[in-house]
Amino acid sequence: MLRIGKMTDYGVVVMTHLARHPDTMQTGAQIAAACGVALPTVSKLLKALTRTGLLQSVRGVAGGYRLARAPAAISVLDVVAALEGPFGLTECSRAATACPQQAGCSLPGHWDLISGAVRSALRGVTLDRMSAPVHRLHWHEPRPSAAAP
Amino acid sequence: MLRIGKMTDYGVVVMTHLARHPDTMQTGAQIAAACGVALPTVSKLLKALTRTGLLQSVRGVAGGYRLARAPAAISVLDVVAALEGPFGLTECSRAATACPQQAGCSLPGHWDLISGAVRSALRGVTLDRMSAPVHRLHWHEPRPSAAAP
DNA sequence: ACAATGGGGACTGCTTTGGTCCCCTATGCG
DNA sequence: CGCATAGGGGACCAAAGCAGTCCCCATTGT
Image (cartoon, rainbow over all chains, first blue to last red):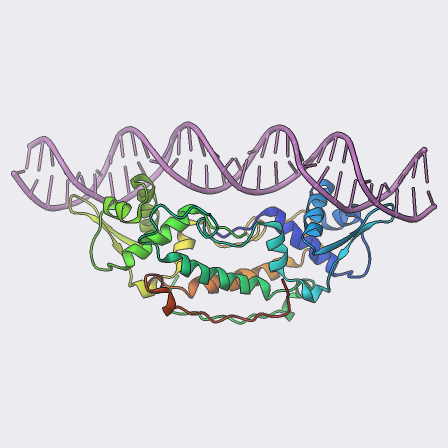
C-alpha cells in the first residue's frame, strides 16, 4: 500500500549517497556506478533534482553534482516532493474538477489531515539521518488511538 | 506524491458512509447510490472489505452489508491495508529478491521507520472521526525537525 | 578545436489500475 | 416449489501512468 515510485526510491538512494560526501563534486557516471543504477536513469533523476534546487550542478569538463544544502537541511519530504508531483493522497485533493457528488463528501478535510501527518513523517527524516546507522534513529509515535488490525 | 489508489479512496468513502448508520443493513445498490459510485465498482469494494473482515454481509433477499465492528474500532489504516496490498513504501521492502547492490544500501531500516510513521498516521484516524465534522479533528504533529521547504 | 559533462525533452514498451460483466450461491416469499 | 432478490468469486478488457532509453544541444576546461 501507499507505494512511492521506483524513481523516487532511487532518488533517495542517490541523495543519501551524496549526503555522505557533502563537499565533493561527483559526476553522473560516478553516482550511477556508486548507486548501481543505469546512467540514463540516474541522469534523469539528477536533472530533476537540480531543477528543483536540491542539487547544484556544474557544467563543462570538470563538472558534476553536489548537494545544494547541508544534509541536515534536506528531508525525505523534499526529495519525494521534487520527484513526484505536489502532495495529495487522493484524486480530488488536487483536481480542479470536484467530485461529482461532494454533497456527502465531508472527507477532504480529513484527508488533508492525514496528508499532513504523512508530510510530517517524511519531513522528520533528513538526509544526514538517512546516511547514519539505523539505530541512531527513533521516532515519536503520534497517537495510536483505538484501532485493532 | 504518495497517491493512494482511487479504489481505496472510494473504499474510505463507503466505509465512512456505513459508519454513519452503524446498525442498519444496507444493500450494495443503496450504498452505491448514496456514495455516487457505480454499482459494479462499489460491489467489488464491498466484497473485498467483507473478505478482509471489515464488513459483515448477509446473503439472500433481505441481505446487505454492515460494519463488522464499531466505527471507532476501524481505522483508515485498516481500510487502506484491506484494499491495497501489505504495507511497504518501497519496492524492495517486500520483494523476496533483494536489491542487486544492497552493499551501500543501509536504507531499508530507514524506510521502515518512515513507513511506521505513516502507519501511525493512518491508524490514528478512525471511522467515527471521519464521519464527524472536520473541526472536531486535530492531530499531534510528530516532530517537525530540521528541514525547510 | 576537442573532449567531457550537464540540460532538456521526446519516445516507447510495459505494468498497474480502474472498471465492467458473467455466472454461481444463498435466502425469503408468494 | 420456484421465482425474485441479494451477495460471492473471478475473468476480462481498456486506459493510464511509469520506467527506462536515447538523441541532440549548451557549457567549459585543456
